[in-house]
Image: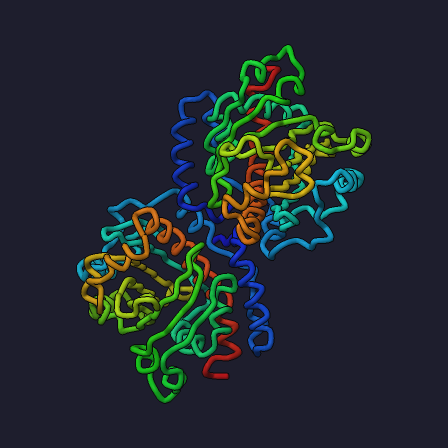
Length: 290
Length: 290
């Protein structure tokens, strides 16, 4: 995997990076604030020539999710598209050398405790992060699932020129439409998957995201899928039937959704590449064994 | 000089690249349409941490331009800033291996004859290009100056998320404020410098740009300076005194101008790096000796 430096950060994100650097400076993990960010060259290139072929995309239907889980590597490693709804669709596959399932899950329990930790993940674009019940999230007597799931996580971040303020509802992947047997057969051992609602309309599901990891030879192999918008299949989540009217109210047409799809793909590419580069060392210093 | 691939092209520019590729396909120079673009890593990095220090910027005053020309390498190789006006300021220094003054000047006589030639220069962002008097531009019995200067050049291009539709008035650098003796002493042998007006307000100067080249050991050393906005010093150009009201009408405040400064810097970085990579071969096939 060839990594290459990011060549573009808009002015707003440059300012956020400077702000975040100051906010993190006093924290014990300040040295892990690295704003020299790299991404896989092949992934950056794969996203620069328009939407991926429709035949290689997946809807958030139970059937399509099962198709994906049955043979995750059958699909291209990176792509974006606009689906019915309209819905912004993103798919990526990340190789995260030196990262384990345990580290990955630990990250989702550790970082929402302080927004500065979230800033380590994407120094230019992460702004705000907190959970409804931080005590539960931090309670080491509970399981990963008990700590993270159904503990609403409010985030603020820049997705390209847009700002996303949303409430993530991390849930068991089987609650999100993943078949338990197929998940297990594919070897997935870590999930940080969620449906989410905009802060401005917390009763409307407008996103489903899957982050599913399995251990490969030299680290975690992470498969990410995002559906953002008003896909009819999102109706199985709370308020999903109201997503079309929310999109209209936000003025998000096909063009707007297509921009979000690409920008979300770039955001995902950047943040998970960067997480891979810092997580083993952060875990080494702040993980449960320390 | 380490070159690195561009990692971000917004959706609009991806579509433009696909359109341009088709438009160029039938032209004899189609093989020079290269959408695999690289930029100097040091320059990309220099632009990612906010505005450059004010002390290292220059206004478009005669005195400041003289200061610059007296010792061009005294200033940082890349930076952007917001100056009085507000005015978007960009400075870059490009090394163009294998490019000569003759090639560089030839490019400005050759490319505006067909917009498809302009697309070779920046496949993702160049849209439109024509001159008022193409016969004069192409007349080989005339000098460079006679062909290019005072032959208004209308361009359409994307500067980041903005669209620039402008009329460039290429002029002798001494008409733009460069002192002839200082220019000569610094060894400059090529210029493609202009003041320009928006197509929507052709009687208002809102930009001064200097592209000054001199031959170095392995190619052209190009110094670029842009002042875009309502700097008081632009009043010495036609309609420069009306620039402040134009900016207000366009809703361009400090934030908008700061965005334009960075996006213009990225645009310049990309197009001149790319031109360096293709010009020697294009000149070899289509230049005057061919």
